[in-house]
Image (cartoon, rainbow, N blue to C red; front, side, top):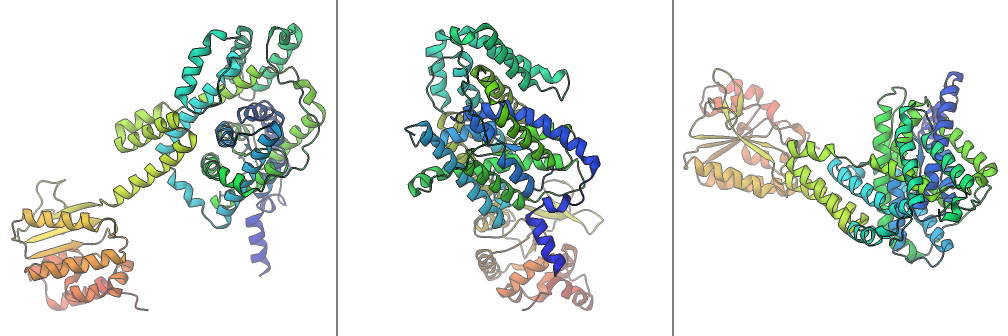
Amino acid sequence: MKNTVLNRIKTFLPILDWLPGYKKSDLQGDLSAGLTVGIMLIPQGMAYAMLAGLEPIHGLYAVTVPLILYAIFGTSRQLAVGPVAMVSLLTAAGIASLNASSPEQYLMYALSLAFLVGLIQFGMGVLRLGFVVNFLSHPVISGFTSAAAIIIGLSQIKHLFRINLPSTEYVQEMIVAIYQNIGDIHWITFGIGVLGIIIIKFGKKIHKSFPAPLVAVVLGILLVWGFDLTAQGVKIVGDVPGGLPSFSSPSFDLQTLKTLLPIALTISLVGFAESFAVAKTIQAKHKNYRINSNQELIALGMANFGAAFFKGYPVTGGFSRTAVNNDAGAKTTMSSIFSAILIVLTLLFFTGLFYNLPSAILAAVVLVAVSGLIDFKEPVHLWHKDKSDFAMLVATFLITLTMGIETGIISGMVLSLVVVIYRASRPHMAQLGRVPGTNVFRNITRFSNLEQKEDVLMARIDGPIYFANVEFIRDKLNLWLLEKKEKVKMIVLNMESVPNIDSTGAHELNEWIMSWRKIGTDVCMTGIKGPVRDVLNRWAILESVGADHVFIDDNTAVSAFEKAIEQDVLEKYTPYATQTNVK
């Protein structure tokens, strides 16, 4: 009993699973990784906060308490949680509809959004709804991410060029505004931004641990300070408040929460999908722990609660930071705690150093980060391999670009479900024939030399029989019967690939059997799985078909039809074909 309780506590608090056995040999890797990721987080956090429409300091607040909370509750030992470009853009898009009257009100909305995201993710984890993210298929995520990356990139042009652009998430409006204002480029700002992009983009080629974003930040600050570029119009971050984040409270106004709910749901799903995908990828390289999707939802929910109550904004696991964390030697989530400590020290002692940081450098950080999110290979791959998935990717991509982030992801999810329903409503079906000289039966459309009997229709249904596909299955069987020109005396339904039958399927199946027998065509079934036999038994269909018409395999059915098998032999195998769990 004691061990059971302890295991449940460890399940909810994974830190208790690894911390008691923490090894000194892990300390060096965790410390190195924590400092490396912490150095990355300083410019990234500030840049992403700016992308979210907040003051840069809130990006640093978002990587203090949330990191520590994830380290306590998370099951991934390398996942680096914090602000990411996608969630930052979604935050800005969601809050824009509320028309905040002041920076303080805007922050309140961001805190409320973080709280709502935390509540949704925590609730999904408790209710064990981690599977819901499966409704975001890979083509949908790829199309959505690529479109969002373009929107994010275009949104940073105003900082890179220092031109006036409207706050919008519609790419057509962005392009028109850029075209109209392109003549107002501030060339010094543009030069600083391009220099930052070059350093960040190619700095990694020096060494994978080279802190390229931080170097770009330092160089940008030195250029502004050394040449007094603010006097020449270069926009800077300005005063960055020092000290630790104070306790904050989100708004619990129902109207506000109701307005934020759609974007909170989007961030919850997209954030979890991104986080869980990278966590699984990294975990595959480590065999000493397992990822639990529901506990990950709880951990991300707790991290977002931390952001909501300590002046942050919605967070999730990031691809680039997690990869750096793993490559730098992280063994446990102690690396995240070290990263948080570095951010705390920065908040306490070093925020004044960022006064002269050019906004163009933060734009460069975002631009380089999102450039890797645009996937050119996946559309080409899908075009050659799966046209329907290609169409779904392109549709999600175009809808997101032209109709907005929320509409794009919701449309993508709906498209995924429509495709799943469409495919499920049209299961693969095959007419079977005997492979010459064997007792094996195969699809007659794939092989030209199979043996068939004119008076027997042998059909295999590869999928469940339920309300959405019964009409398709019936029409297919009737078409095959018509093609045989009413010569069929026996229909053999191969059920070995039918995993389940619902009430509609059972009712329709019984109707088919009775209607076929009325016109003189007998029916038998083969290879029925145990759970399906139980369903057929509950609906009295096995009784309707008759135990002597239910066979263990196709060969036995054909032999019985041809009377080529002794009755005592047939009865010997009948229980294996008809036995059910009667309760």
